Image 1 (cartoon, rainbow, N blue to C red):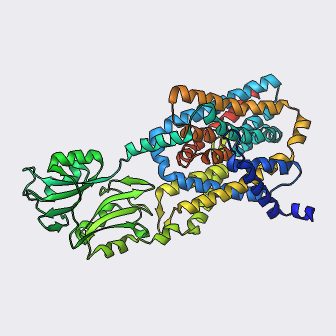
Image 2 (spheres, rainbow, N blue to C red):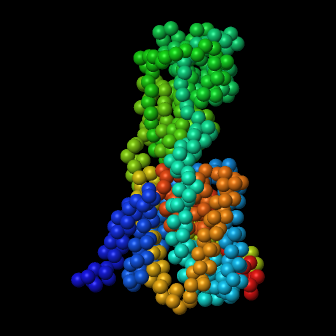
Amino acid sequence: MISSLLSSTIFVLFVIIALGFIVGRISIKGITLDVSAVIFVALLFGHFGIVVPAELGNFGMTLFIFAIGIQAGPGFFSTFKSKGKTLAGIASVLVLTAAVTALAVKYIFDLDASDTAGLLAGALTSTPGLATAREITGDNAAISYGIAYPFGVIGVILFVKLLPRLLKINVKDEEAKLAADQKELYPDIVAHAYRVTNPLIVGRELQDIKLRLHTGAVISRIQRGEESILPKAHTVLQEGDLLKAVGTPLSHDKVREFVGERLEGELPFGDNVELQTGLVTAKALVNRTLGSLNLQQNFHCVVTRVRRAGIDLSPSPSLALKFGDKLTLVGSKDTMDEVLRLIGNEGKRISDTDFLPIALGIALGVIVGKISLSFSDSFTFSFGLTGGVLLTALVLSAVGKTGPVIWTMSGSANQLLRQLGLLLFLANVGTAAGRGLVATFMDSGWSLFIGGFFITLLPMVVATLVTRYFFRVNILDLLGTLTGGMTSTPGLAAADSMSDSSAVSVAYATVYPVAMVLLIICIQIVSMIIG
């Protein structure tokens, strides 16, 4: 009975996951392993010869990486522009330190080229790196890779889990600082009422004074006596008119100078004016600019703010709409239903999961990963499965839409796929690494393990010190950069579970391609130096 159960992949898989969650909830001095504990339980099962098939692990890794790419895509390119050089610099320090450490280990323990190249790839858990090492130095690189790999996985997990405590940094406080920094980039959109007292705009049409252009604010309605008026291009302002303006605090300072006295309180909507919120779920509107809808002229309706991923955006005419944007609308009651139908406003479509984009995206990512680039007879590069899927997901998520296909998924769906994929991946990686761990140590000695230990640990220590004393980035960016620089998917899972912010995933996605390419180059250089 027991042997029959242990031979069942489904039974073993979910026992490992269940025990992993139990162990992960154990707190030692406030530190928990969370979902990362699954890999430790899997190592134990693997030691006793129980292995989760590699196909399940690859399937899980693909789901996890694709979901991470889709989540990180919208913020990836803006982060790369603002912090990309810094984060890539940190990752480069990490990989180069690993290469130098590998060379030092080679001379300390008198290793050959295959052992050294395999250790470097295993310590940074890089499958493309292993492929490069085997191609240059032979199949023996796989042995040292297998020895270094387990600590390459476990070491990164433990390091990122312990790092905030060692640096005496509260992750939640750092998360709040990131949110404050983001608020400076995307300040809150607020509304205020004004009385027209500036003689320079009295008697002029709204289209002539170009208030939105000069201030960045939107006029949502005008009150003239007892009458509530929806603003139009040809509306003529009169002295004493009351305006409701919506914009950032900075734009309101300009509105006050432009219009006149700021008032306290709210303006009434009037009998034929109402405020509504609606969701952009119509596929035809994705990537179209707000100005191209011409809502003011066609429906006597004004968009006063756009909320996207928890951030309020100013509704400029050039703003491209994305699936799931929440629009605040002020307009005529007679046409509001038409506006809502135009944008879609189907909340159920936000929560539904369309598997067509997921399947197409992953298939395309696998193809990208298979593409091999030859720069010379001695240097051939491909992104591999992980890199191809990640890069494809980042690009597709940033594009948003291709024809009728929307490259997005709801937050709950993303979280479910990411968690499921991660659990499958950790169960396979752990059991595969644990199966021959003890035997390999007995056969090959401890020198390779010690070498791999230092190649994993020293680069993270050096990169952390360089970051803290020279770059001073947020701890969440650092955690994402460390796991991306180490090309460690389990490490990303451990770091990602420590915060509700997407900063870790975005930083990981930012540096991962840089680290992967640089590592392959370093493996080739190290092999050439030793050879």
